[in-house]
Length: 141
Ligand SMILES: [Zn+2]
Image (cartoon, rainbow, N blue to C red; front, side):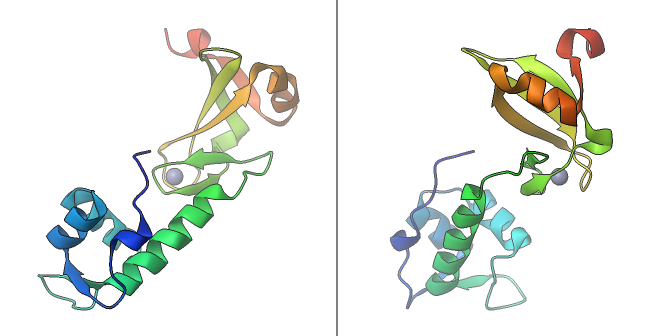
């Protein structure tokens, strides 16, 4: 995930087009467009899209608040559709990472993309009760 945009970087009383919003927030226009797809409300249905600063603030605060919500033990996080999801068939591959952490990778039940969960190695046993885990080496030569 990239650096978080500061909601206060836009003025609530102003409206922004995509380029202006991107510049104010230090993001690319592509990022702003992905936010619009994701639900950031625009004021006009045709291009150029105008977005109120207030809507941007509201959207960003809600987005970051949602990201902070802790995952339930049975959830992975899917960056593709942006939320807590369960992996298909409750199966996941175990990818050893640096230090004492491992990355669990599964297939998102909602969008079919890759959803992940980072856990410490010491919790592998606990997760093995809940999920069908296989080692990266076994499934992906
Ligand atoms: Zn997904």
